[in-house]
Image 1 (cartoon, one colour):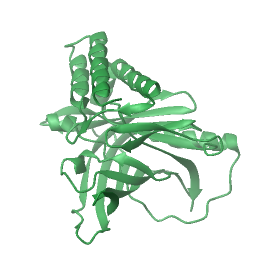
Image 2 (cartoon, rainbow, N blue to C red; image 1 turned 135 degrees about the vertical axis):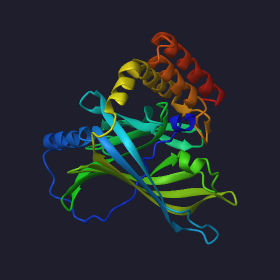
Image 3 (spheres, one colour; image 1 turned 45 degrees about the horizontal axis):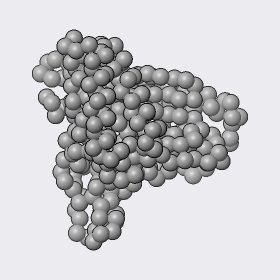
Image 4 (spheres, rainbow, N blue to C red; image 1 turned 60 degrees about the vertical axis):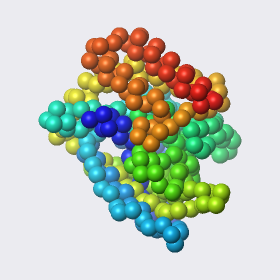
Length: 321
């Protein structure tokens, strides 16, 4: 059961064919509102399908692993909306022997015309990438966070319409291995990915090109191309209340955790923390366990926050961040 607690965010997605020509531009105000509607429209209750495939090997000595399809149910909630900043929290609901179990899953933050974005800089490190006034005009950044609210990757792009489909697409950005890959000890150790989101009549899709890369003779080299498509289809036929109960009991704790990560990143010019294959950061398992203890009434919120913040401080200092 514990391994389920540490399931990595499976938000790495595959491309679909699109037409080349965008539709005419719309007025800035209406475009901003349309962008917000697309982001906020990702909130809801969903049946999720995760479809991952290594398709093209870039090396003669590497054979792509078999395609993998999995799924589950997720509750996605807007946990903050200031107008120019929207935070969406994903909560995974699984059946643990007839009892619903809630796993705090990934989080996505969307910011309009950000001055800087927290991006992956290599093993155990994230740093700020500045955007010039020209580069950020009309742009939304998407920063994806791990289950303990530590950063995973960040990118930026515009919501545009191609072939009648509105979508957001990032530029290429670096990100660490997802747990599904990390636990295998593969020859690659990072992804260079392009991220996309689009809404449809039944929900939304999140798809991505991942160029999996690793060191070959001391030089970073391409190993294999992966396509991943995550489909979110609206569905209320699962225990949504379990997710809502979890969030009601722990949201104050997670507000404090997010604020502490933000403080560390601002004060230190980014974040350094050691990661491990099974859990993400070395403190992820304990940070999640504290939330479970809080929901169970085994610890007071103030004590939970104090213990978690101490763990974060120790782990970032130990990693040199």
